[in-house]
Every structure is written in structure tokens, then in C-alpha cells.
Amino acid sequence: MDQQVIGGQAEHGLLLQGQLERMWRARELTDVVLLAGGIPFHCHRVVLSAFSPYFRAMFTCGLRETRGGEVPLRETPAQSLELILGYMYCSQLPLSPENIQCVAAAAFLLHIDGAFRLCQSYMVEGMDTSNCVGLYHWARDLGATDLAGISLRYLCRHFTQVCQEEEVLELDAQSLGCLLGSDDLNVTQEECVLELVLRWIERRRGDEQSEAQAIELLQRVRLELINPNFLRRARRRNPTSCLSVAAASPRPTLRYGMETTDLLLCLGGNDETRLPAPGGGVADLSFCFAPHVRKTYHIPSPVKGKGVITAGGVTRDNSIVAAVEEDDNCTKRLAIYRYDQSYGRWEELCWAGYRDMYAMGVLGDALYLLGGQMKVRNHYVITNCVERWSMKRGGSWLSFAPLPLPVACHCVVSLKDRLYVLGGWTPQMFYVYYWM
Image (cartoon, rainbow, N blue to C red; front, side):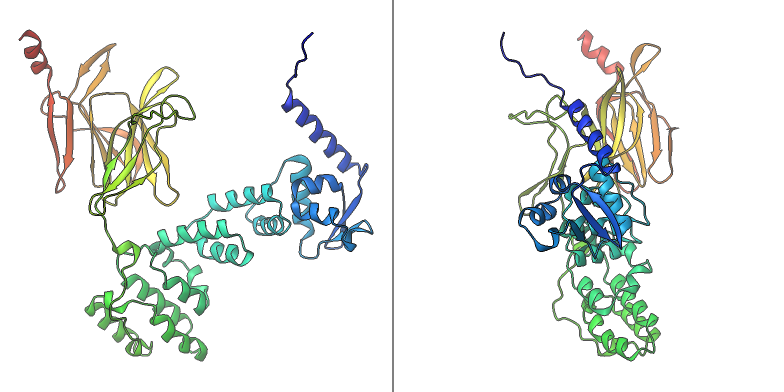
């Protein structure tokens, strides 16, 4: 009889985890005690070493602290250690806004990478303009470079909104100055940066040390990029703000949000390589091409394995939207996605009833589906139907003024608050071509 390897890895893993959890709770065969906040935690060295290279090095190098069977963890709160041990033995890590920073710091310092990744995902999902500044500085001071980088990119991308939050005003002069010196701030006007500095100065009026630091902060503002009238009004409103002595850079560098680049956007399709997608089918290729520098920038595709991009557009605020034909349980539909430039991923906005050979237009904050072929009473017909969906209000698709005649295989362009329908064919044209 031939030798066979029988599977069952999942069952084996669950059995092992269950037995380790039972032994931990019963303090059975434990061989080390961790002390945190004066509270003892009985553990198994092999479990600690499996999850943490910090503990593995401690127990295998014969450190003096481990010889007595007790290991003091002076920088780790007892509650955080208890949660992390629960992660090791039970694969559970309950996180909340109240405990996240303490648990994340303990996981990072003890080199428990799996627990820290869960903490990082939790913090990134909860990040917004009101907390990204504090999260960036906390992660930077901790030494968590990946989390600090994610937070800083989010901060710079949403800097105009961050300037309106109270958190940024709590920064010390050095931290705020380093931030304002960055070229990566996504601001279209330097006036936003100047207003932030003036608010920071106003909050500390009367503090001699802060007034001395104000000159250094104002030197971070690129005054040559500010409208002269705006600058004169700012000086009149803040006669003692040191604006008059702040020197302007002779040739300041534009910040990220002040530069614009024309791009050709290509969504969907594939090339001769026909790379397979993880979910099956062929991978879609999506990229941007900058004609003036002849560079190509790749972006992820909204198609997850199966599906076809059938239309796309760019909104007034440069948001990229795409319509993907999807087959959901044998029912076709159009899923509308928007590209989140902050995280480099697509998010689903809404979905619409299926149609093909249609055109999608973008006007203001609204999306329009125009014409095409739709299924009516079990028959496919060319239609003049137009539907509208508000990106601002959401909700359902609403019927809009129909086209003058049914049309398919056409295209739509927007110009000066108008949509123009070009090309295509009508049912009458089809019959003429057919009989000819």
C-alpha cells in the first residue's frame, strides 16, 4: 500500500490552539511568569517565543532576568499585556478607541508583529482629519515607520481639511514648522498655510517664547505665492504677528496641490501577456500616461477577477469613477466605483440596472447613464432612457429628461455645464443597414 499524506491542517491547528488555551488558563506546564504593573501572568516560553523574536532571544540567550522564572515588563501596562496574551493563546484581540494606543505600543515594543498589524489596521481604518496629526507624531516617536508614513501621506493629502481641526493647533513650534516645510502638502493656495500659522500665533498671544517662535514659523510660509491683497489684509488684521519682518523666499517651490498635470487615463482591457487575475479570468490593466514627460503611472483596477469596465469618467474635483459590468448570482448589473487617491484603492459608490452599449457622463457632482440597450419585458431594446445619480446625496438612480431618440454605441462629453452626445446608431439606422 502506497504511503499517503492525509490533510487536516485546519483541524490540527484548532486542536493545538484549544489545548494551549486550556493549559494557559489552568496554569498547566507554565514555565515563566511575566510581571506587568505588579500583576503576574503565567505563560509558556515556547508560546511567547513563537510569536515574538524579542522573547525568543531572551529565552535562548540565557539572560540573567530569565533565570529566576520571572520577567519584569516595566513599560507594559497589565491590561495591555493581558490582551496580547489573549491574542497569542486565543487568536482574539478586542480593540477599542480607549485601549488601542497602549496595546499597539506594547505589541510594537515586544515585537509581536501579528498583534501590531491588527492594531495598525484598526488605527488606519479610524483615521480622519481630526486625529491624523496626533497619530503621525505618536507613530513616529514610537518608531513605527510604516504607520507614520501612512499617517503622514493622509495628513498631506487632506491638509486643507486638517488645517480646520483643533489638533494641529496643539503642535509645538518645531513640529508644526517641520510639517509646513514639506513640499507634499496638498494645498491649492498658500493662503491656507498662512491662516493656520496666524491661528497658531493668536492662540499663544502673550507668550514671549511663542512670539519668538512665530517668526520662524512665518518663514516656513511661502509668502511670494500669496496674493498681495490677501497679504495686506492679513497684516492689517495682525499688526503684532511679526508678518512685517518675515522674509519671503525669492523663488519658492510650489507645493504638491499647486501643480497640475494633464494625464491620459486608460481603464480596463489587457495586453498580449493576458496575466491571470487572482479571482479568475484575465487581469485588467489600468494606467495613466503623462504626455509632457512621457511617463506611465499604473493604478489598480476596479475589476476583482471577473467583470468588465464598460465606462468611466473624471469629476470636477478630479475623482475617477468607473462602471463595471458584474454578474451577481446570474444577474447582471453595473457597479459604480470611485478611486480613493489617499489609499490607492477603489471603493464602491452604488450600482445600477444592467444596460450595454450605453454612455456615462459626469457633470458637476452627478453621474448620468444615457441610452444603450436595456431589457424590457424579456426583450432587449435600444432606449433613450437617461438616469442620474448624485455623488453628493447618494440614494437611488433617478429618471432624467430622455434623449431625443433611442441611441446605442455612442459617447458623451461634458463642456461648460452641458452634456453632448456624439455618434452611435439608432434602430432606424440598423434597419437601413440591414436591408442594404
